[in-house]
Image 1 (tube, each protein chain N blue to C red):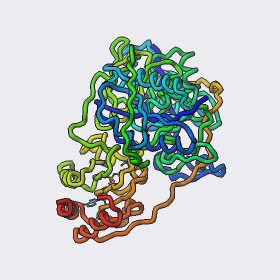
Image 2: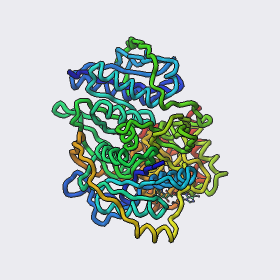
Image 3: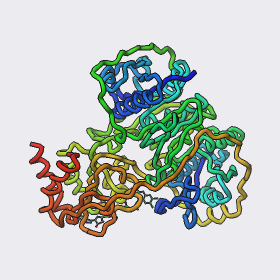
Image 4: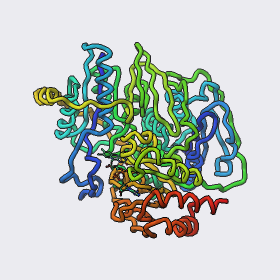
Length: 322
Length: 250
Ligand SMILES: Cc1cc2nc3c(=O)[nH]c(=O)nc-3n(C[C@H](O)[C@H](O)[C@H](O)COP(=O)(O)OP(=O)(O)OC[C@H]3O[C@@H](n4cnc5c(N)ncnc54)[C@H](O)[C@@H]3O)c2cc1C
């Protein structure tokens, strides 16, 4: 008998990743629709703010705990989730499609003789079955599919599903002490990118392209990003030129992002760039060429010079924020 | 030591996608196929590893798919890979089916280090490496930007959201390559000529019964082109007003 939806909460350095709230909300609503129980699971050592998940409908959280599990270990984490899913008769498992979820989901699927669909942008229940929609060919097409395995595993694209507060209860946390985790592969160090918000997780992205004319002008992008609390993105042209690090590249061979607002500055909108950002909720384009392809997918555009518009935009936003 | 590089044959990234008549896959007429861009980093790392380990190391390029994949295998051979293997399958297998076939072949060849590109730019799943590792019982480090081998020990840096992780493990291992891992070499003219003469081993891909089912493929809803608000900074106040009041995103 399989009877439970499990959402996996992701922590790094003891703090919870935002996509976990989305994974819990998705799990809670699927459990409701499918008439299954719901439970959240987290692996780690000391973790802050776990009981807040109660607000999102996670009445119960199982915390698989060991100080050696503070750092991510793909071998230990996939073993533990696989075993817990078996023990608890899970039939559906939801994770965020981050580096964490994308690594674990397939490995857990093989352990459970089941399958997974990753990077879902929609999960609906039709005649008692979960139908997943995900982008393929870098978002140039969408594919609908389902799983015919006993246990069904899905990862959800961050920032697409809503994390919904539905209760004022705190979660009850059940701690299970883990002995001898399988640390065959383990993280020995974490190098945080200095004080920077990652494009893949950001709610607002300000991205610059070759129209910025040189790395020294990215301070205009940085100032705007600062007032908006945004992450910085880049086109491949400026990454290849060495103006910006590859971790900021958006597009088919960079990151795929779905922020609520994407501001493209001096970016032409090549098909490979659009592939990575066209699912953003709102797109603003600033480009002096009014025929640039970026305008075809932008909601709002200014067909002008970034060196004139960016400082004015930063000032205007500063004004309304103060 | 035997090293495997698993490579895929994908539509050129500039392709405009049309949906096929089955409504479940793309229409491939007129589409140019290329070696998956991330696989170039995987091939380069395999060749670099061979250079370090010595000339008795053999690098195999393995691909699952149809006759057309031979073109992509030849590209790997031209870059310097020793042997090419095509695991033939003309159906549209899911990543599990591909990983299963690869793992059977890797097992029978006895490879201990396996490189993949971190993602195929067709289905963008980024899971085939992890699946193959799991089928083989190998360790796995995905999305790697720095790889070091020291005896049996592997130390790799991988890209994650907001930073990098340093991961330690041992061979046998599966590594999936991210851009930044290395600078892929160009095939030399000599390499290209030699690759033309090399034979590619062909065998049927190991059978697999698939658990994922494709229901339909569609183009994303097309977006209404937006409004151009002006041509200079005088349009900025209106833009900010729209972002605040209409879009409600700032
Ligand atoms: C296999 C492959 C994978 C790729 N993957 C990616 C990817 O992941 N991401 C990606 O971005 N690209 C990718 N590309 C590259 C892509 O094809 C484009 O070359 C790239 O996106 C162009 O970057 P850009 O828009 O910054 O530069 P350009 O195309 O040169 O555009 C610059 C724009 O700036 C505008 N401009 C110039 N001056 C000003 C000014 N003063 N004010 C305002 N506007 C100005 C110009 O009008 C122009 O539109 C890939 C290509 C290939 C072949």
